[in-house]
Image (cartoon, rainbow, N blue to C red; front, side, top):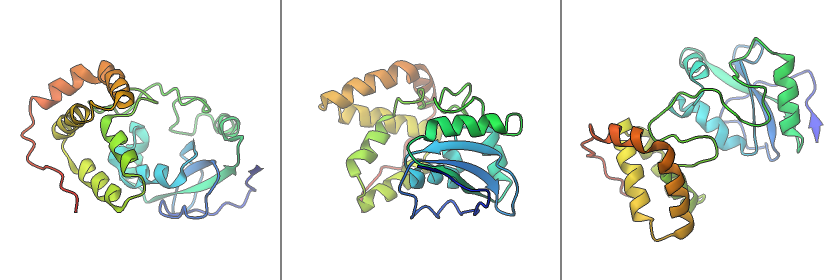
Length: 202
C-alpha cells in the first residue's frame, strides 16, 4: 500500500497493463496540469475504457470536458486503502474538480442519465451478459456493438436479454431490481425503436 510521490506520469487511457492493485486516479490534460476529476477503481483497465468512450462516462460535466480535451490519467495512490485516500485527495482539491461528492462511497448526486441506468451498484442485463463472456474475445465485440446502439435500441436489447435469461434465478432477481428503477424510462425509450441491428457473434 503506498501513496504515489509528487512526480506523476501522465498515462494514456490504454496504459493500464501494470496496474494490478486498486488505484486512486486523476483525470488530467495530456499536455499537463492538475486533475479535473479524481476517482477510484479496483479494475483500472475497465474504468479507463469508460473514459475512452465518452458515452459511458456518467459524470455529465466530465463527459463534456472529455469531448473537447485530449486527456489521460495519473495514478495518485495504489493499495487497499483506496477509499480513504480518494476522499482525502478530493478534499484537498475541493472546488477545482468535476466530482460531485467527497469520494469513498460513490454516492453520486447526479449522473448523465440514460434510460437503462438504475443506480450505482445495480447492473443492467447486458452487464451480466458481459460477465458471462468473461475475457473471451467475443466480449470486446459485443461491448462495441452494444455501445453503438441508439438509446431506444439499447433499451429494447436490455429488456430482451432480461427475458432470455429469465431461467437464471440469481440474474432474474437482479433484473427485477433493475427494472424497478428503470421501467418507465425504458418503456418510453422503446416506443421509438425499430431495432434493426441484431448482435451476431463472430
